[in-house]
Image (cartoon, rainbow, N blue to C red; front, side, top):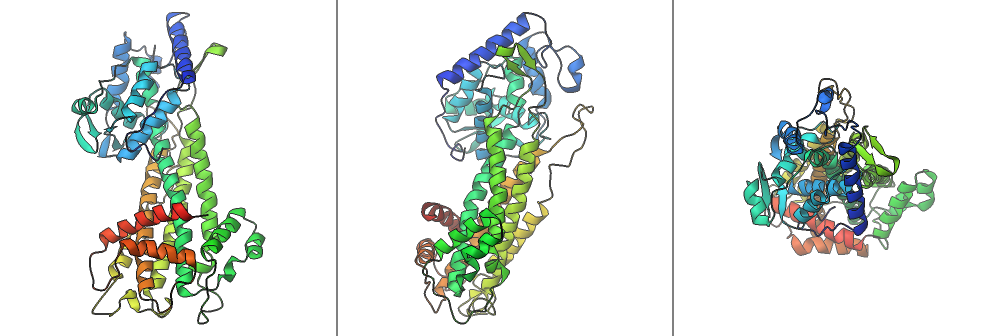
Length: 482
């Protein structure tokens, strides 16, 4: 899913095609046969289910999409918009939604191009699926509203033509199935979890480099000590820190016990590993499941009306992600604070400025980092229990999973920037070091940063350096981590 921000070939297997066809045939038999009521096909939508729907399937399609095209706010990032279409295709391809093969195939063909629907940020409560954002996505595929091609925003009909696609033709069942799932929530949560997992490895590597540059003793990583704590992920994190710090030479000038931003990192980052791991597992279960209502089971002659569009699992997972990511961000900000302080940074000058006063080095970088971490803290209010009844009390309890997932996605983006800032600070600390980095793997990471980021000999803009450092850390750490 992390690659779907750019054109990606997605094909339906023979088994998927057979399952989709079988489900579709069953729906048509039900609608043309015994007169069983089918939500959204023979009825109105939401609390208006007690009334009959429109006369034709085309009108029923318009009915569901038009009244939901009400979203507001900036467009979602293109990777989320495209990932949501992949998640929706995956759910529909399991054959339990009763859609046509042509509908699922159209989503796959879209993903092979640079097309992305323009989806407003605000509008979903994540309860009856991501109705409003997915309605905008489907409208884009029909040539209504706006869309992107290779990052350029334009009218949706023009975008379809530029991408070599034709407007999507739908009936009522197809339209309802396309919007009646939590695919935007799952997509955003999945991308957030992937980013958080990468950033956790970066946090471990940066902590090791900082410890090495300060000459800290690695006694806080003793395997028996961490095993006694009772949390396996803490012990695993300690082993990874020790791997980075292999052959480090401690300084005789350091205190017996380091500040918590070094000494307690196995416990902090190990707990974050556990939380991020649970969140990622929950999102993976969402990705494997079917999010829609109703579902159709031909073998049981069953049309099942229920709540498989209720995004509570990813809501909880996303809130936990936000909390874990923010605490890792707190750690990064405190580590930057340690590096600017001549009383704690191993004797380096304040702000890592070679000529303090004539030069300010990372002074502005620290202020930016403080701003970022406070923004992350303010955004950490859980969304998963902010239930407000809506929709004539048809949706009388809602999980707000979409808001939780989009917050987690933004938190993960800010953590990358905090690590980029810490990367620039570490690179400058190494430049001012009287003693070379002693752990070979830490030296390699500093060298990778130094290849792209010049030392701060005179004050200069660091905004681009921070983003470059984030990219270097992502790629290098992923390549060499144990």
